[in-house]
Amino acid sequence: MTPQKTLSPREMQLLEVLRQFGGHARNAEIAEFLDVSDETVRRAVKSLSKMGVVARGHGGVRLLETRQQTGFFQRFSEFTKEKSKIAKAVAKAVPDGATVFLDVGSTTAIGAEELRVRHNLTVVTNSTKVAHELVEHNGNRVFLLGGEMRKDELGAFGFVAEAQARRYSYDVALLSADALNSKYGFLYENPVEAELASVVLERTSLALVAMVHQKFETAGRHQGFDPSQIGRLVTDVAPGKKLAAKLERWQIDVEVAE
Image 1 (cartoon, helix red, strand yellow):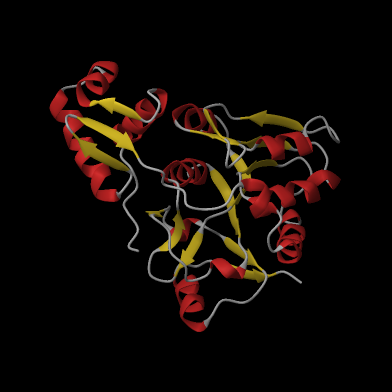
Image 2 (tube, one colour):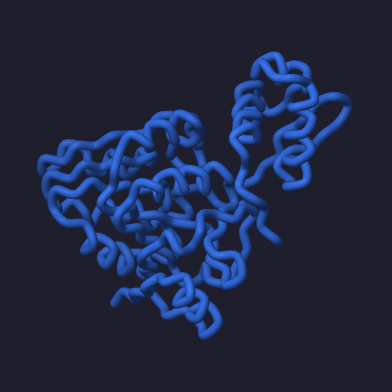
């Protein structure tokens, strides 16, 4: 499947409104809520419909399920040996006293466990599991981003999370993605995950993606950030020739965890 473009701020607003309205609303209701014209709403709805994010009909719009993957705890229990190796390698990139962002990925959550040996970290995260793992431990300060909570991720997303993420400057960002494709780069099933990652990357000195090799050359609905913004990919198996060549072109270092 060809990934869709990153959502515009207006499209993100419309999705937020749909969630607040329980997944369905009339165009006129959305226009009134956002204080914009009906035509503005129609254009945004048309664009989102082409992406497969919403369905149009009879002057209204319905939010479609965009994430077709298992819940957090099931993902957490998959490929545990590989994720544990990756998490140990990722944690080595975070020194004591660093300001670090961790997202809601299951490998990232295991990485948070490995970071318990560090001291005096400033941890910014949208993951409740990461926050619980590191809060008030070894002098850490933990800041949990607000926003709309997602049960399947145990984390928060949306405008509030993004606005709060912009308040920090990160020494290291530990990120995840749903897929890595040699043609399109890092891909996501959920557009709000891609958007939050993009916000964090604008303020990060060193960005790492932690990813099991099973995600290589797979597909996702939404194209994420510019791959060249990533400094290092930490994985468990070296990428194939085609993907390795693209990673080199994107100037992404590859670390195979042992």
